[in-house]
Image (cartoon, rainbow, N blue to C red; front, side, top):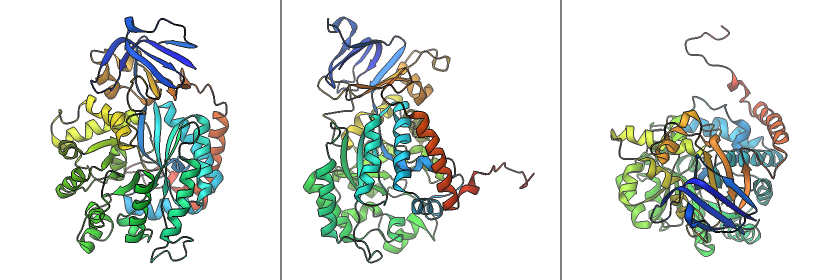
Length: 473
């Protein structure tokens, strides 16, 4: 299919960071054919042409931390710090979710991300039924048309999980077989990564060990896979979470990876609220990547990480939303805005996070973190045509002097007008042209989500909690 976007404000995010007012993006056979100012547009017919006057065109946004299963229990987790949320909310929900629940939630998550301008996500998987989890998560997202990096949770027997079906060596063979089957599938939309957990609350749950971390890392090196891991987050209390384990072990999460000899460019370290100066130096030397989830940290009251320091040290930093049972929204425009606002307040300096910098974090930096910078993340000839067009004509976006600043600071994800993934229009004028089951997905997700909440014992959390009002008043 061929597609031409014309008369747009085109923000390429290419190495020169070129911007074309009244520019075009030409797409053919799933690739970007040409990008530039209006006079340079190819003189030929395209199957579809979008007059994007008053719109901004950017590379599709990349969400590097998502838990799509959480769509079914969105809106129930107010007022919980991380550790009680993990043990009292997440674990009961997972125990009562079926693979069919997971499948429906994957549809809903993909629709929400595309509707808000995201074209690629890293799905940080949780512990479901081994290979069946792949079918439940990958099929629906590919059907909707989203590009997905599915990070399979790497698990094996540990001292606290002696009944796990796989030894470390068996887990390598098993997950390696899944990589063979799914990596690069669905026309290249599906990639595989690993989830290797080794932080405080995963250690407390007994889901990690030195052997597990080394085995997962060895598989990633052998198959050239990225590894995602929740890192250095949680409450600063003496009896739980990050500080508890810092006192007990005398090392940070990053120091632990370094001590095992596995800290390198394969790792995407998520959250990082409590990264120390030494951690940052080690991360810079190792070439690993870091992913900031600003609204997640805010919703849990977890703190504000040293992201400006990471940037200044040369660590590649990108953005993620976390799952929608954490902070309810996976809108990546919202994440860019929150990143900018929170970091500027933390440093009492309105220059440390500019609109341009956070747009890099949401596009090219995310692609680099995935090792896909030659394929996505910028609008350049030869790259996959992952393109997001946002309508900037609404009154909430006026008056526009600098469209990039207005986009980051004033727009919403729902301003997405047209989205192409691999050159295919998956969103057109805010609607899904290739997927007719939106209402059915919402209906079924609502039924299933309420059933999960009841079975998990968290349905009562939906009650109103007006400050200063007596219960029943």
